[in-house]
Structures are given as C-alpha cells and as structure tokens.
Image 1: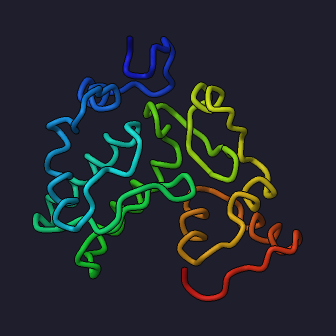
Image 2 (image 1 turned 180 degrees about the vertical axis):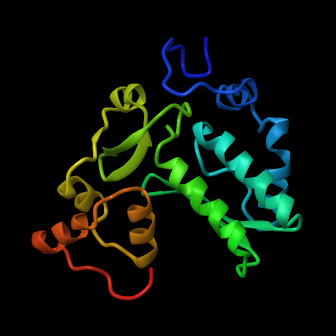
Length: 190
C-alpha cells in the first residue's frame, strides 16, 4: 500500500521522508515531528490539529522558523476554511517568519489534507476543505468553485477569515454574494 492510500497515480511526488509522514500508522506521532510537538506542548496545545497530508508542510515550516528563532513556540496550529492556521509566540515576529507562514498557508490551499497530493477547495456539508480529487470523491465533497458555494460555507466572515480566504484564491466577489443572500457581515475583528 502506498502513502496515498493505495492509489497508483499522484500529481505531486513525495520525498521518501514526506511519504513516511503521510503514511504514518501508529499510536503516537513519528519521531520526525518531535521538534514541532515540543513547541506545541509548551504553548498548551497537545496535538497536531491538521491531517497527515499537511504534516510535511508544518514540519518544513517549523524547521524554517526554528532556524531564525530557535526559542519560538506555536500558539495556534490547525485548519480554518481549508487553509493552514499557524501562529507563533511571541506575536511580534520578524517579517521573514511572517512570510514563511504566509507561504505555508498558500501551499496548504494546494495540498490535500489527507495525502499531500495536489488539491483544490471543496465543500463538505458546511465546511471548506482542501482535498485531492480522489479524497473529495470518497468523502462526498463537491468543488467549491462558485461564489455561492464559498459564501454558504463562510456565512459570517471575520477579518482573519477574509485574509485566509483571499490568500487561498477565493474571489472577493464571494463576500458580495453573502450580502445578496441577506447574510449580515460581521463587523470588527473576529
């Protein structure tokens, strides 16, 4: 069985190390994630709140940030609107680190959360998720291609959510579709 769930075709080839992470089966996390896990534990977060398809992405991001700021801590790690949600402590981070996080968030919008293959935004019920075609099909997700799809999945947009959505390539007109449907936009910060 391959790291991508037995499928023989992939759009994106994984390094052997990344394939091992994505295909990991065990009761604990693989040793390769120990440095990142240690940063999570200190900030009160005890799990990686992202699927295995994004483990290589967050491991690479952790190594890049640790090179510049070895004592940094992860204050938030998860997925929000199909985009990697990653924040560090202290909050007054260098511009280089901000750019690294932004690049990883952008990459997450093109990386399947399950298998790390090429992905697109999908809707699964009320959620926006980032999946490859095969995983979207197996989960019954449908493409989130129209403004209405996106507006329904994001009924009340906060400033932070809008930033993530726009960085993921969601058209600004999606937020106009909300108002046309009568969904009141949130005012202020989320």
